[in-house]
Image 1 (tube, rainbow, N blue to C red):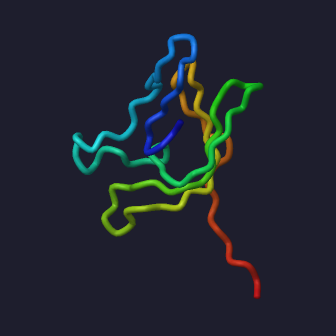
Image 2 (image 1 turned 45 degrees about the vertical axis):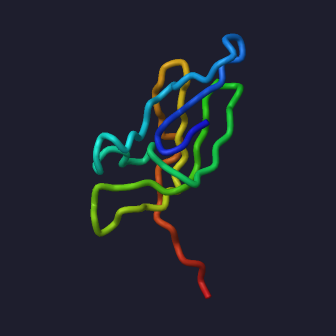
Length: 99
């Protein structure tokens, strides 16, 4: 599971949930929980070939008070074994359809 920067997995062998990445904690103040890996309303799939989570879209908070939420259209991967994030596809600007 991935939401707001926190990655959690169920360990069936131990019959318990495990936090793989802590992510957002509101007790740390308003600047904590910003950035592209702390997102909501995204799509996520598991890539069994590469044993990673692949995340697309959603929105994330920024520290800019004039632009608090940003729509994301990049593709990220999270490796549960290493706890590392990788950018698979950089964000691009959204273009309006011609009329």
